[in-house]
Amino acid sequence: MLITMTSYVCPRCQVHSPTDTLTWRCPKCGGPWDLEFASGPVSLPSLASRQNSLWRYEEALPPMPYAPEVTLGEGRTPLVPLGEREEGSVSAKLDFLMPTLSFKDRGAVMLAAHALRLARNGGLDRVVADSSGNAGTAIAAYGARAGLDCLVYVPEGTSPKKLEQIRAHGARVVEVPGDREATARAARAAADESGTFYASHVYNPYFLHGTKTYVYELWEELGGRLPDTIVVPVGNGTLLLGAALALDELHRHGLTDNRPALVAVQAEAVSPLAAAFHAGADELGAPAPVRPTLAEGIAIPAPPRAHQILRAVRATGGTFLTVTEDQIRTAQRDLARRGLFVESTGVACWAAVQAAPPRPGLTVVPLCGAGAKTGLAV
Image (cartoon, rainbow, N blue to C red; front, side, top):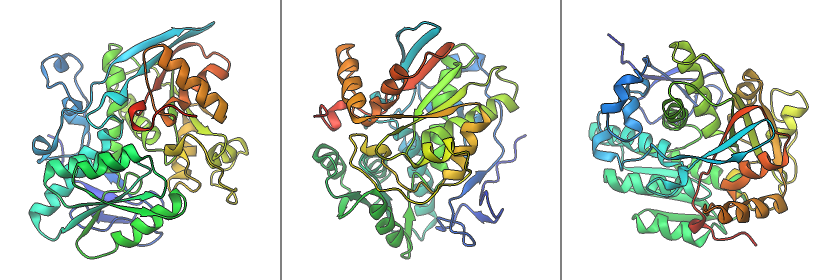
């Protein structure tokens, strides 16, 4: 019988906190939480008869009693081939086919289900999130599904289509002058107010346990194996860290015998993690000037989980790649000609794979957000 007690834990200080509080960061160092709970192995043969959503991997997920009230059927996105290369092949996982048209639904449903539990227990008045668009949209949608009052902070200049989508779900939008980091600071200040749940896709680890289902789906789709390389776009690192969680769990439970390399992709214009990785550093260096980029969703100058991201990539023998603005434009048009209209952030991985030397075996890239959200890059 699994022990289902769940708690927050700081990966640096080992400080613990109950998950039924509104404490959104470690009180000692101010860093983001990890989640401590007993995950169990998923039986591959049993999956054939389960619901067609990410909740089919319930043994691997933290206890979520209100999930049935919040789910929109997220997960189980298609894996399609993009072509053969000299030494291997590339497939794309179409996460832009989620209910709100981005992979952020994987984590947002977890946050909304957890927030609903807190609201039912009393003491929660509103949900606050910050986002460059997709995470805010997902929080707004699942917050609406859960009947929660949501406030979403976004950078000034966020895509009008994304703002329209957030407002359509009934969330209030606060546009913050400045860059993505200024938006995060404003949201964190609001998160400290009484009765506020900070639905942060960076600080709250429930989000990561949603994004890890991306890799569980690959494992199931490939018949109990994993690709040789998993390429992910990295800003705050929520998809990469979720993938790392899944790789550790699948290996620990003896469910796979291969461990893919995690290859992280950043825009050349905003690439603090790539610079730190290639310098051999464990932390970010001095802040570099932030330049405009079409990949707005990964334009994060100071990701709070930088140390964990760098460690995860190194642990798998992976690396960091960067892409230029011209490569992003070209990749978006190339995918569109293949029948896949993806937003500019979401094509970064395809741009990187096309520019880099071929890797042996199967490489999988995520197509994270729909092109309808931002239009064609100009």
